[in-house]
Image (tube, rainbow, N blue to C red; front, side, top):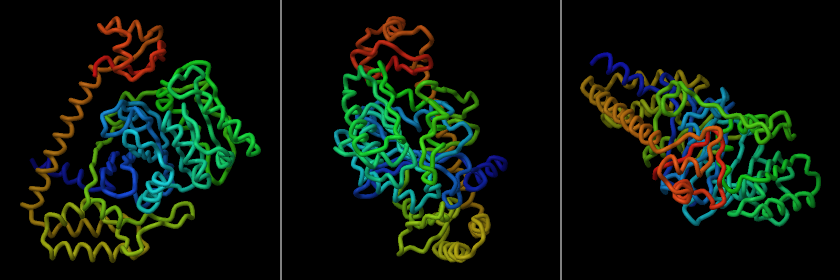
Length: 429
């Protein structure tokens, strides 16, 4: 029991466990999309000012929490695809409700929230998306070209008649000529309109002969993200050393622990109390850009350990901990010093209180592991990994389905026949 208690205490301490995690912000803030944030192992929301950010915008058929078909960057990591290849990055995935579409101003509020309360490199913010998300990507980059270092819009278009903002940043547009859901003429029009704006040296248009509207596998290619990370606001050029369309690179992480890598992973639903703690957090200045923290709040880099202890301790102990944290935050010392102060505060909690906290944490860990294993088993049973020579018709026949049933389960268009090796095909709902 002592060993388990020690391990659970370590799991409660940030800057020690440094686990990767996904935070979910649902129905907490008005006039802002719900969103999820993937944080890599070792990420520090105050100090990691060198971290790039990728914003992924989904299409109409998928949204987190709406039961649609999931795909995209975070989903790819969850399935064991090694898309970051040693370059840690934050991934933010906003969630548009069915029929809502993407609004650039509303998306920008997500960006401003990140900038105010999460450390990252403000010169390396990227936007990618497909279908409705492809439209959202180009609309956003066109409206905020001074913030987006590079963008990739797949199977979409752009609402602006003169999208001259796209001429200011590396823009890669991908569309299949046989797309029956969103006509390729939408992307053709964007490219022609950009030419009227002037120089298009920062544009690449991959007009594919085939592929239909099912190009979701691009988000599994690690060199798509490698291409993004080649760009920065400080260096406005289109990198030609990486071509994820002509030479797609797909790698899996066989050593993953559910969410990739070897670290403990958490799915965290942010509550109002946790939101208040995040809003009180002011990251270090990133790339010379000023932070956007709320002026009425004294910035305190309070750790989850302190928050957990405060919820269990008396009002007197909570006040003492807050004063101690606030004093540490005003100094120029690192967050390690703040962590030490908060750790000292935890000693005022009785052993019975600490043991109760640890027991609860152990139960959460065991349940999370059980849920993850169950989900992994179910996902594995319901998904077939396409091999070389496979077609949708062949896969359907081998699994007792009609071709139309298989298309319906996966949300494929009626004309889709081919599958790529390594593509995941659902064989059950």
